[in-house]
Figure 1 (cartoon, rainbow, N blue to C red):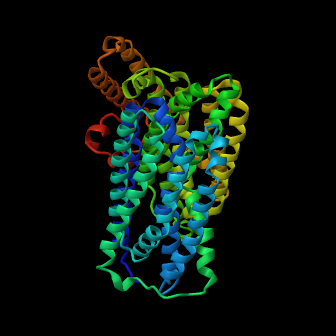
Figure 2 (cartoon, one colour):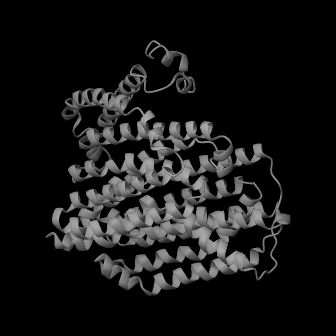
Figure 3 (spheres, rainbow, N blue to C red):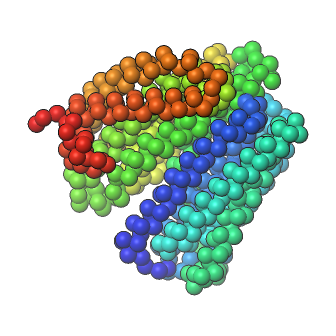
Length: 514
C-alpha cells in the first residue's frame, strides 16, 4: 500500500468527516417531506424497513471498510479476492436469513403486510462486499475522496428515489409501496456508489491486488473488528430497530386497534430526524475539538490530551443541552410546522431528552475507541439495546407513546453511564468537576424565559406555515443568542476557547472581568 504523509491523512480524514456530516444531515432532513407526502401511516412503513437498510449502510460505510483498511496497514498487499469472498459469505448469509424469514419478522412486528418490503430490503446486503472492499482499499492507501464521493452519491440517489417512490405510492393508494420503493432506491443508490468507486479504481489499479490468500487473519479481522466497529455506529439505529419490532404489538396490548397502532408508530417516528439532527450537530462540533486520541498520545501527552477531551465533552454538553431544551419548548410549534399536526407532542417532547444523552455518548465513545476500548463501547450499545427491548415490553403496553419515549431515554442513559465509568479507568472523576454545570443551568433558564415569552405569539401564525417557519427561526435565533451571551457572561468558556470562536473580539467583551 502507498504511504501517506500525516498532512494528507488529516486532509483525507477531514474530507471523509465532512462527507459523513453532509450525508447525515441529508439522511435526517428528507424524512420530513417523506412524512408530509405519505402521512404517518406511510412513514411508519418506511421506518419499519429503515433499520435493515441502515445496518447494510453502516456495514458498507464504516465497519467492513475499516476492517479492510486495517488489513491494508498490516499487510504489504491485501488479497482482495479473499476479502470479497469472506464478505460475500457473511452478507449472503444475512441476506438468505432475512429474505427467508421475512414473514417471521413481519409477524414479530405485528404487521404481515410488511413481508414484501422486508424481503426487498435485504437485497441491499448483496452490494455490501463490493462497496466495502473498494472503500476499505482506498482508505488503506490514505485516499479518502472515493469513499466521500461514493457516500454522497449514494445518499442523493437514495433520497431522491425514496421521495419519488413515496409520491407514486400515494398516487396508487397502496402505502406499502413506500417500503418496497425505499428498498429499491437503496439498491439503486448502492449501485451508483459502486460505479463511482469503479471509476476511481481505474486510475489506481496498482493498489488493488486480486490474488488469493488462506490467512485466517483476514477472517478474524473482518468478522470481529468489522462487526465491533459497526456496532459502535448503531446507537440510534438500534433504538429504531427495537421499536420496529416491539411498538406495534405493545400498542395493540395498550388497547389500540392495529390501524391505530400503525399510525401511532408513525407519529412516534417523527422524533427520529430531529434526534439525528440534534445529535449530529452537537457531537460533530465536539469531535472536531478532539485530536487523534490514541493510547500513545495519551501516554506521552496526557495533560494536553485530557484538556482536549474535557473541552470536547464540554461543548457537546453545552450544545446538546440547548438543542434538547429548545426542541422541548418549541415542539408545540415544530410538530405542526414540520409534520402538519400536533399529534404526540407530549411524548415527543420527552423523547427529545435522547439528544443530550446520545450526543455525550458519541463524544465519550469516540475517546474510548481511540484508547482501545472498541469492544467495550460495542457491548455497552448491545446492553442498551437489550434494556430498550425489555423496557418497551414493560412500559409501552402500560403507557403507550410515553412508555416508548422513556424506554429510549433509559437505554441511552445506560450507555452513557457505562462510557463514563469506563473512562474513569483512564482519567480521574474529579476531571468532570470542571464542566460548567452551574453556568449552563442558569443560561438554560434565561433561554427558557425568552423562548416561552415568544411562544405566546405563536397562535397568531397558526394555519400560515411559511410565517410559522420564519417565526420559529426567529425564536431559535433569539434563544440561541441569549444562551450564548449568558454562557459567556457567567464564565462557562475560558479565554482560549472564546478565541477559537468566530467574531471572537466581540465575544471577548462579554466575558466577566478578570
